[in-house]
Amino acid sequence: MKAIDLFCGCGGLSAGLRDAGYKILAGIDIEQHYIQTFIENFPDSLSICSDASKVVPVELLSQLGLKVGELDLLVGGPPCQGFSKNVPHSQRKLHSENNTLVNTFLEYCEAMLPKWVLMENVAEMRNGFNQHYTDEIVERLTNAGYQVIHGIYNAADYGVPQRRRRAFFMARRDGVAPKEPIITHAKEAANDLFSSLKPHITVWNAISDLKPLKHGQGESPDTYFKPPQNHYQEYIRNGCTFTYNHVAKSLKPIQYERIASLQPGQGIKDLPDHLRPKGGYSGAYGRLTKDIVMPTITRWVFHAGSGRWGHPKDLRLITIREAARLHGFKDCFKFVGSYTQQAGQLGNSVPPLLAKIMGEAFLD
Image (cartoon, rainbow, N blue to C red; front, side):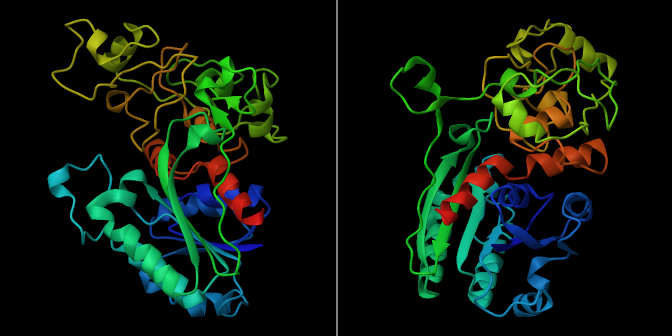
């Protein structure tokens, strides 16, 4: 099955779809350092660094040796800043440039007429602005001959060790009604002997086999510290011999003091008076505990003062590799660019394991 990934970023959707058996023909993104990571991990795919609205969909199909209607799957996650809850409500505008790229994605659908469509966005997009964009997506895809379903899905319920709620739109024009993916994990599963669901995967389930580090330490690539400790770690290693991006960010003295003064589970409100900043997020300088599901990873995962990114055992922040593990990226997926750029690529991506399950729903 052949797929094209619009607004591909570093390749989270593509990585999951590849694991589901799809061939990724092309990825398009305007960010140069995102595309560099895509190229690193998808060397056989066409990589286009461009504003997607400047690419002619039919010409792209021709370049790939396809005609209108022959593409199996068009996927994409149009930039969502205009819907994000991290943007103050007063600054969210219906026709923000950050929102209108949803229309660009729909224009590709209407021009290419792929058999299947998968679009991802932040959860707030589905109901935002009185469901304006949801209604438009459903109306335009229906008019183009598609059957459409949509919903909000939490990555943790599908085997990703992270609480991450996202909206997905699934559409088919091959005469078959789309099917929602079936939930596989649940918080209550561990206490229910009769449940077919598995317990949510925790932070320590995901990263316990990676090498302990002090801040500023680490090499990429590096060897593994110990054998895989569970099925998730076996899956995520996927036969890899080395691990990449397991390098701990160097902390400023005040940042290290703050993290070193906290126990796992504590955060900014628990800091001693002389170390407490004047303000900050409720999760700032927070340290993870081993038994929780990871909070939503953002592009600020590199910054101690912007979230609960503290390692549950070592006195440091989690590495890009650990964040990638908690996001569902396999260990052979290599992020390139500066540490901050890698964090941005990761935080803005779709968890590959969730993308895999969404892709498999079309194949059912």
